[in-house]
Image (cartoon, rainbow, N blue to C red):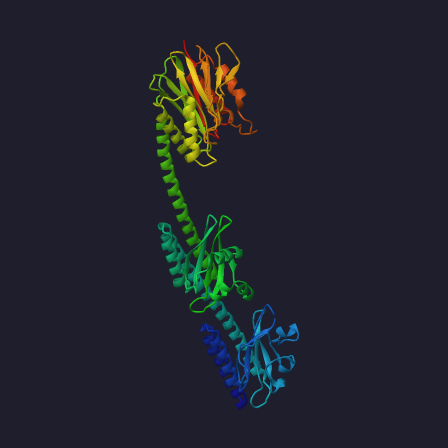
Length: 579
């Protein structure tokens, strides 16, 4: 073997050793900057090249970014949008000359003819180029040198791809760890929120979560409870917004996430003044219930999509918990009201005669059914000092508690007047004047009462605007209506005396007194009223029965007609004359 061959063998062994050592070093590295830096240094040192650079391809735009360079002076890395190839065929070649570069190429080459661009690729995927300037001795690259560079490019490209995959995997794991941490945080917060019924404590925890997790110091939480907008919590604001501004902010934010631009800030100076960086609309069951505005993070790091997702999840947790406190308060108020209504119902029932007193000479039955817990219907049966009996039935306008209170006043006035020796007409006039002076103008009472003189079987009565009671004589099918009296109670002050009339009750005669909950009961489908004709027919069909049975028959028929849904209070007072 001659000396020249021996030198070639030594050079090849050196190059092979260099490639192997470089391969091991680069493959083990996970740092792309280290890989690119060593690729440039090894090639420049081995081939005595003074200028080199690495360009990485953008697969979307087809252009390149200068990632690393040495020897090109002030030309730094990071230049984007560089055009390198003039035809796609260049991507398939192992290398091509620098003179094939386009005129727009930003890096100046001293000797384009002896400069080369080597393809950085793996299998059939192109990743970029390695640019080598001319050798320091201006000699062209030998075949072995070109093959040496080409081999290093293949190894380095594989290392760069592995580094990129490793970094992507590391970022994925980092993001996954962060998501797990966020989910654990949300889980812990949800447990804590579920235990709280104090809105102030929930708002305080929400504030600390914003600061601890996202470094947010400035925020505002606007909550809508039954169309009443309230700033439930805030922090770091230059000035609390006015009620008008709160409404403006709440109604303006329609999107789930809004990032205020300059125009939005111009139209809403309060947002700009408090440096609100993002606004969130929180909806529950497609109804907007809250708006949350947050300022920039204390560390000035921009919000990422993951940050927004965490913020929305945290905000939803807080808002749902806050809404739960309102529901709980409503439930407590409702239960308290139901308890109070239950007490009121028992008190109201205590005002009615129970049991119904027996009255000599008549078969008597009476009943009231309230459409609510308490109602405005009223009936009474009471003894007078002279041994006679007072029957009364009344219907207060409206329903519920207000009507029940007015009914209780009527009952007390009636019992106060019982021992007073006045006629029914005079007593009715006094009751009317008291109610007119002490109740609102939209409250009045239809009232019928009668005094039964047992010795003479005579019924003296006054009807103050009430449904005329129906009198069915024995062995007859025509009804008499007891309508004499005057205006309903409380409508206006008494001007004319109430008319009092007398009715003789003979054995078998039947008197049915009722409130409009009977005749105005509605059928559920066609909204037809029960009416007086159906009531009269029911009375005739059951006239031979006792008063209690007649009452039950009427109630059953009304309930069946209305589908067992009473829209108004229902009261019946039935008197049947005996032998």
